[in-house]
Length: 246
Image (cartoon, one colour):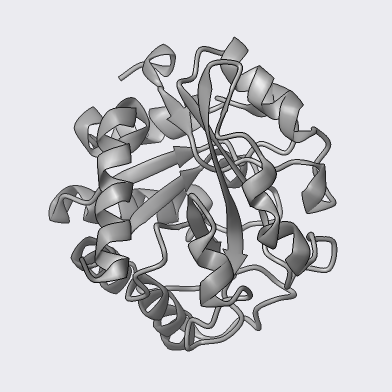
């Protein structure tokens, strides 16, 4: 399990997110230069104050899905806005996204107690349009990890190990929570995804902290989707067929 064997990233941001600093083209070019086969461009959903407006997500069809010889998955980091798992984009706009990440972000989400936050996460996992739960690792947003991991497994939703979280000073108990979550993923044989959550080009493929914690817990490389882009594409195609009821 080595950094050079990473084949793709899902979770990155461009200037469209308001608090990121690279353009779409710059981010893709950097991914190519770092040897990736694919890159996900997943700007924040519109419930955040500096995020792009709804029109941005309607017009994603104009962006190339292959640039500089690598695949580009254009999607969003959606916001959960309540304990029912309501999203900040409607179903039709979500259908236009290549990749659908979702997280609990203030001020889009009012932090609840462990039961309320867990309810939000479970409802997100049960939504067939969702591919991945991002950074469920902050004790400021407490969650029952056993329930989350089991529900994610049941509904084929990826759980994320986020490099930005591992170095964030404003989050609480990230490392401890990830060890709990990853041990449960190991127990239930969940797939996980490693994410730089890059907000500038130089941070793309910055995943060593994620790899280190996975090694510490004993997560096998077969359970980390970043090492197997062809299998990930099959996973997404299967998700979309299930979404359409095929």
